[in-house]
Length: 335
Length: 195
Image (cartoon, rainbow over all chains, first blue to last red; front, side, top):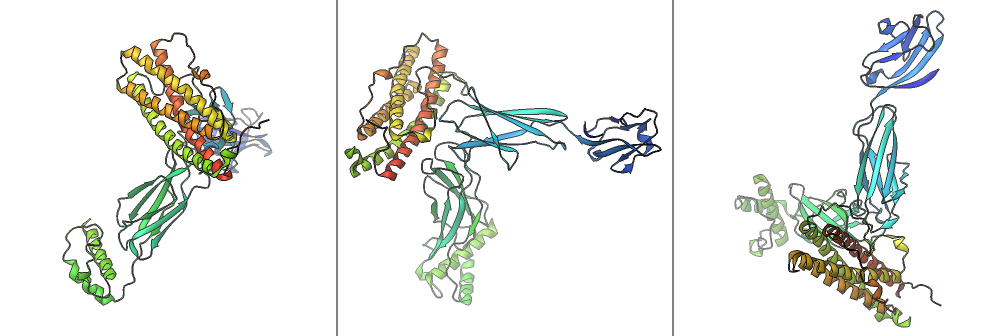
């Protein structure tokens, strides 16, 4: 007879050789390897304080005939700890999903049972095929002040545990991040970046349930983010970018009225438009001339610095850009 | 329904919906702020559960997306007329409790009552645009309640304000649906079949 035997880590395990007498001559193997007689008490196999690595197939053979008398698969594991459960609506007002996981593995199979109660009504949370530790539920009512109560119970051969979360319909609303974030330079504008994005595709009705957005951006060379909140529209023009600096940009979304902000979108990188330098030599001379005038980090050059009277070389814009680059470079040195 | 379908009626409807959405948004924020003040001044636990209170219109609705425009307007109007009476009653209870209403709570209640009244009027305008007769107001008086203890009245007030906050949220969504339907068809939201 072959069967599965579940035991707790650290437990002492005694295996009998089926119906064989205690004093019968037997040989035990673990995964095909003979087990030393020191682990035997008569025909019983004794495993003290079992650990995970002792999981495997244990077989008992009659001494002289080598007939297989008993076989078991030992699975060493732990009872489940309190599971972590979270529920979220990323597709309001259609419904919400709950997902869960165990804080530490049990090393043996677990089964999960979830119950969702809204007032006096028990609702069915349909398990997702993938990922398998998730289920979804449709809202039967909207705008309810009655809380939802979700209880998850996890059970395995060594024990069970459960957790409960209670929430309002509107507190768990959290959209997915905006999609297809694109950032482009604006021709002939060295301090602008045009950013556009789309509503997350999982948000079913942005017209009736509009989203607002939060945009953050910073040059790669700095740690401080700039933030802009936008109550409508899916585009924004950054107008205070540092000339010539590569930027990292992200966008988050939130329902206009309820819930919490989404995670940040995938980051995109962009550098504002810069004019092609015409003469490298000329710019090096300009850099030499202007480098001694800066002793601390200054904000990006404004049009005041780009004084046409200071032009040396082929164009005011090129000089302004170069002066800005030098000032910013010196600023970086002092950060 | 020719008048309701005219371009000027469509524009007027769209304008009323847009303003209504803004009114509902502002009202919701003020009700949430009032809730904080109410909980604090009445010494209540903000997370206290309040059973459904008789006479308080419940915002919760099933098949919300299947409602017609007229249904939305009528249900909203009935709710805000009821809240108008309920808030007036709460103000009166404040006066009885404290001997005056010129407290922070009293002023906040009065301000929200004003917004509720204004919103009810706004809904009446929208219904008139649908060439619908306005339902009688007689049914919207708050029910005569048996004498409640002070604590029971406080809890009831909490229930009223929570439900009002949900209604304000629902109203902005309802008006968006109305505006969407109006843009899509260029005509009045669908009405129930008439003989």
